Length: 327
Image (cartoon, rainbow, N blue to C red; front, side, top):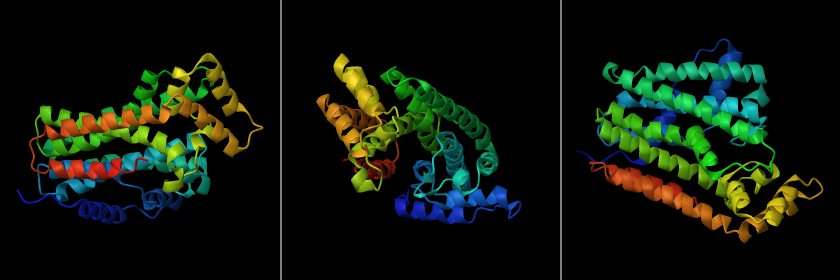
């Protein structure tokens, strides 16, 4: 088997195909937002993982590229709708779709993106379509479930803590299962048996969990290096793994202090972030979260190494570069 394509080559192929996606020009207020959100870039991790997974078993990326883009279009559909629910003004440093147009436009354009995702998935060879469609539908519904759990958590009073197991299940559904499907995609399209496709899925779920927990960390500890607002999750009283774990471990007095600080309007943003961070440090929350990230990263590597492909090292090397985003 020839060497696997370099990650940079696959990334260039993805960007090129996204720019070439055929979208009608009319009605403009339906399709312009679709073109806009897809043009904002991002890491394209999910289609990249899908194509790298497929490349473990096949050199013919031509038959996989458009179906792999279905995952990216679906992911961006969820972002458009999530931004409406979160009332978020910015996405990747630019206006969100509902902020640039309005919520009705964003809802309908998001719906169109979901349909487009299915159209792209249809581009797989006919023999692979039933299995991929079943896996895609299962994943898509789970992502919706995860988003609903996340919204349910936001409705809980801050003093009613979310259990660690609840939080992990929520991020598994909202984030990790789509990583799982992305790697599973390559196995299904590559005609691998269920043992292999299940291994790929499980590896992807571990990667997705590590990715989300890492993002929770970076919000507070990596903002200066990654262009994010430092402590934005604290300012928004968002229930992250850091907060969930701190409230679980805190003494009764510290439990009340964490809540009081996060709810206090008289503190400056800087002082509020510093106070909560100090309380996190009292309970080694940074180290505990790092251990979780590293544990899921190791599980990902362990599962991938079980797959009989000379190209598995390419995925391992790529994920190692992602892990280096940690602070």
